[in-house]
Amino acid sequence: MVDLETRELDYFVAVAEELHFGRAAARLAIAQPALSKAIQRVETRLGVQLLVRSSRHVSLTPAGEALLHHGRHALNAVSAAARSARRAGDVQAQLRLVIKPGGDANLLSGILAAYAGQPDARRVDILFGGATDRADYLRDGRADVALLYAPFDDLTGLESETLFVEGRVAILPRDHRLAARTELRMADLEHETLPRWKGVPGSGTGPEIVDVAQMTQLIMLGRTIAILPRSSVEPVHPGLVHKPVVDAEPSRLVVAWSQLDHRPLVASFVEAAVAASRPQPDPAAGQGPGAAPGGDVRQSPGRSPV
Image (cartoon, rainbow, N blue to C red; front, top):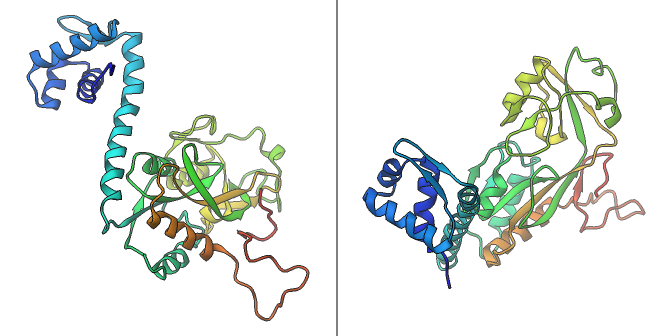
């Protein structure tokens, strides 16, 4: 037996978010008495009270808080499933790629060129996400593939292939006590303030930021420093210095897609991205003992993959 219908869950989430039956009814375009009766039926069926009602106030009980949390995820999953089904049946569907502006390690042009050479290539729509929300584009169906940075981005529920491995750098104001050093270790930065990236738990204790522009301004003001992949902070801002952190975990640029998405157009793009990211052999160098095998991922100088 299904305890809740999607429509009923949608009704409850609207009331729980608005905490007002009138506003929720207007949002849902239904009559307020009908909405109130629908919520009462849900409470009766579940056997718990979800809302505390008074003439002036609506609040959530612990059971209501739990249903709101899981209900949002359930509704998002249903929407994503519907979008995926429509796209799977659309033979003319375009491929949607989400990236962070400047977050492609200068690989995007080569990847798109390689994909365009595939016999089943589609037009690629480029979507620009924020610093921390691009993985959500894949989970809720807004995008088909993404360029993400591991371990910074959460890859839960996603498949991925590594395209590029690089070291990380500390970004410091020019008058910082460590600015004259040629390289740093994590121990040198132990007592420094790192920013809190919005949507990334445990990312730091400093000011909350949502993008690199905010981060740059706060570093110049001496409020924080940052440790980021080398390619994501180039070119160097004139008010800052970048120092390699030699023992920081390397960063991996990956092409990612949903674990549930097995469509050929996604597989074709991933194949092209991996091929385009491989280092091209130098014809003059030959294949000596130090030559890298063709399947290795591209690396920045001096860094090794993990």
